[in-house]
Each structure stands twice: as C-alpha cells, then as structure tokens.
Amino acid sequence: MKKVLNHIIVIAVLLLAATSCTDVLDQKAVDSFNQEAVFSDIGLTRAFLGNCYDNIGGGGDWGVLGMREDMLCSMTDQNLCIHRPSSYAFLKGDLTPDNLGHIGVDGAMGFLNWSAVYKNIQNINTLLDNIDKVPTKTSTDVDLITRMKGEAYFIRAYDYYLLLSGYGGVILNDKPFMLGQDYLTITRSTLQETKDFILADIAQAIALLPATMEQGRATRAAAAALKSRLLTFCASELTNGGYEASNTLVSFPAGSRTALLQAARDAAKAIMDGTYGTYQLTGTTADPPSPLTAADVKTYSDNYFSIFNQKGAWNEETIWGIQYNLVGGNTHQINTWNGPNGYHQWGNNEPTEPAVRSFEMADGTPFVWDAYTPGDQLLRTATAAQLAADPDRNPYNGREPRFYACILYHGAKWQPRPADMAGDDPIGLIQTANFYNNDGTIKSTGIDTRQAIVAGAWNGTKTGYYLKKFMDSEALATGEYYNNINAWVEFRYAEIVLNYAEACIELGGADLQNGIDALNMIRNRAGLPDRVTADQTTARQFLRHERSIELFGGGYRWYDIRRWMICENVVENVYEMKIKQFVNGNMEWKYDLSTNSDDRSFIQSNYWLPISRDEVNKAPQLQQNPGY
Image (cartoon, rainbow, N blue to C red; front, top):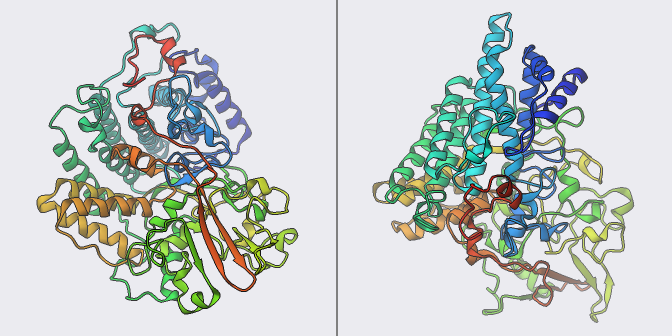
C-alpha cells in the first residue's frame, strides 16, 4: 500500500491519527476541525484510509503485517529471534497480563497488541461513520467512495480476525467511541458473535470491492481469502472444545465443528473455482521428474523463492500483500534484519535445527539425521572420501527444493560479499562452520559465525542457520543499509489450497481424497511426489507437515500449533548446530546441547493471549481469558 507523498495530506492524516488513534477504553475526542477537513476532500479521505492500511494489526514505521525485524515466526518452534528472545513470552511459560512481551508492544517490534489493533478499528469506524459526507463531483468519485467503503470493511474484518485468533471473543463495535461514553458497560462478545461480526464485514467487503485494484489495496479475492483463513481457524480443535469447552469466549457451542469445517471447505473451494478471480500456483503442478536432477531442484527452488521476491507486478499466486518501494512509501530492510553478519547484517529470525531437519529429501522421503550412525541424533561425521562417494552424507545435500529457498546453511551460495568482507570468499558461500587444521587446531573462524573476527559478529547465528526466504538474492541488497522492495505476500493461493485440503481431511469420508489431491498440488509444485493414503490420521499428519514447510517463516505456524493444540509437543529449547570443516576435507556436524541458545517452555493457559492488566484496570467488567 503506497503512502501518500503530498505533505499537506500527510500532515492532515497524522493530525487526525494523533487524536483519533487512542486506546479503545481511553478515548479522546477527535479534533472537529481535522475530522471535518479529512472528510471534506476525497483525496484526504483516501489518504486517511491509507494510514489505516499501514496500521493493520497494529503496524508501525518498521513493519506492516509480517514484514518486521522481529517476526511472528520466531514465536514458534521453527525460528529464533536472536535480538530479543526474552520478549517472546509465549515461548517462556511466563505470558501473563503483566508480562506480554512483544504482544504488549505498540509499534515496530510488536504484534497482536490489543490496544494497537483497536486504535485502527477506531479509525476505520470513524471513516465508515463519515465517508458518506465526503463531497463527490464525478461518477469516478462515487465509485471511489464505494471502493473505499469495501476496503474499510476489509481492514476492520482483518483487525477483528487478529483479535479473535489471539484472544477469542472480543469487544465488538461498528461505531467510533466518543468522549463521555460509558465504557463500564462494555463487555466481550462470544466467540460465535465475534466470528459472525467478522463474516458480515467480509460479506460487505466482497460486495463493494472490485476484482482488481492497485497492488496493495484489497480486492474481493483478498476478502474471500480472509474468510477462508478465519473459518479455518474457527474450525479447529482449539475453538471447538479443546480448551474450556463451556467458555463461550474461547469455544463454539458443542456440535459446531462439522458445520464450521464445511464452511471452511466451501470458502476455500469458492476461491479455487475462480469465483473471485483467476489464481493458481505459480510454476507447474504436473508430476515432477523422478529422480530430480540438480537442475530440476534449482528450477523448483527458484520458482518457490520467486514468490517472496516479487518487486513488480505480482504473479498469479498472489492474492494480496504489501507493496514496497525504495523511497517515498512503505519500506522494509529484511535483508538487513535477517541476513548473515558476514554481510554487515543482523542475523535475526534464524531457523532452528528441528525445523531444518523437517524438510524432506529430494525424492520425498523423510530426512533421517542418523541414517549413517543409527541412534545418534547429535553427531554426523564424514571424511572427504566418504563425501565424494556419497554426497548425501552432508546433511544439506540432496534435500527438497523448498529447503534451498528457505534456509541459508554452511556452504550455501548466497550473494557476493561487500568488499571489506570478501576475503577469500568472493562468490558468497555461507560460512557457519569454523575451519580446522587436520590436527584439530583451529585455523580460522567462519565469517558468518559469532566467533568471526569482523565487526558485528554479535549478530552471528545462534542456531547454525539463517532465514533465506523473504530476502532479496540480488547483489544490490548486500550491506546493512539497503531498503528492500520485494513485496510481503499476506494471502496467496497456496494457503487457500492448504485450507481446503485441511477441511476435507478433517471432514473425512468422501472429502478425504479431495483433501489429499489438493495437498498433492502443493507437493507437485514443490517438486515432490504424491502422498497416498486412505487413512485420516495419516492424511492429517501429511497435511500438518506440508503446512509447516510450504508456509515456513510466514507466521502461520503460530496460529497452527495453537489451533492444533500441539504447542507442548513442539516447543523446546533451542541449541546450535556447530560445524567443523577440516583442511583435508573432512567434516563434522554436531548438535550441541551443552549450551542453550534459548530456554523455552509452554504452559496450557498460553493457548489464548491474556488481556493486559492496563486494559482490565480501565474496564474491570471485562472477563479475562481462562488461566489468567
């Protein structure tokens, strides 16, 4: 979503935002002159709407939705934020109304913050309450007003979806809060009522929005994709008796799940049937070659990586996302935030060892760490001769194509290094190993490790890996101060296909094979062979694995491990993969459990977020979530 560059418009919007973006339970009056000005000119109104886009989910100058320095994926088992790991209270077993970590932050590093999201809802309500007063001069203006209403309904639905998926039933309001309003009468609605409110907004958005828009603005397909995501969450175990079945704030009435699964299936299928426009998986979904050659692996990998490296017109898989520019609009620095320290970058949001091991081999079989030393899950060794005879002794060789699009590992080719970092590595091979003489004495430290003798080594990897996905692979992105322009893809067709597959598999019966067929579309596009099973339990395992890989790093995992109620099974301490490369070509890979990179634990109450103490103090009648 491009920000408006006209300084007069920006000032007017900021003035209004400064007075209307207040806490939902501590509102101040909107300055009447500024409000009158904004809704007296269609250009100012559009700019105000743009500000609401930028603050979806409680945005900030350093990130909109998932594109931020500390990513939501690091609040899962798959990634580690090395800069502020203690702020992920969800993973520490100490998430409370008084200790929210990132959830309690309104701004660059925060997400899912109750107050910040309600600020944006307040602004949207203000817009919807006033937009019919905006003067129109032409039929084009009238059409624009209609579209802006649709966009506003989409944004409000999205913000309420975020609240529902984090907190359950919440405060519902379709009018702006006013000065003097009695907030002591405000209560939370049930989960059912909250879901229905969001669906009504989505229906309004679909009715008012066009099929195509300027990139970054919502379309009817974006609203339909939100419906699919909402219903997928609502049809889950968590919201259907998995946690306090009798509590209507966090659970639907008994017997609701089948109807919710059917609704989730149908919402996804409508998109797949082209009801809202033509979308498809980029690349081919034909059966992949068997075996895959190195060239095949690269082709599939490059295709998948390109989805997240789009800079111009979006491809046929992208339904909605955030458009970025070098200057004069939304910007991000994902290369700086996540890139290796051997490029003057900050190394954040690093993949964990269990996540790296979860990627399959190129033939679709599971990766087995102890294939050569059964029972030893910590150590692999290989001589140069063994590697020459069997390259797959290197745990990063022979893996599925998406592995090479998502993970930067020792030996991975990345970018040419900045001149002062190039040394003996002009082509840019990742060095997360330290180098040893044949007698075991250290020869040199890898430039991308924390032991590197370079400025910024404190940004070196704590897991042995870096997150490649979402970064820009072009040389222009090298260095610490580069603004990326690749888009953040929030809704894409692959998610819709996976939503459909999951609903079908959970429904079982006649729907089961439809779910497996949809799942195989995702696998075939990734260069992997079909899954074959008639067993619902096995199909469910296949589906959950596929979501974890296809949606890796995008933040979806946080919702998935909660709605599947598997957090206690997957949240574990993070340790480093330490690698030694010897002069004679011998290698050692050791998963070092002697020092934690991050201590983690999970408690049952954290399946739902607590409402902050400040919010409850302002409105003591608000019922807190269970367990807090």
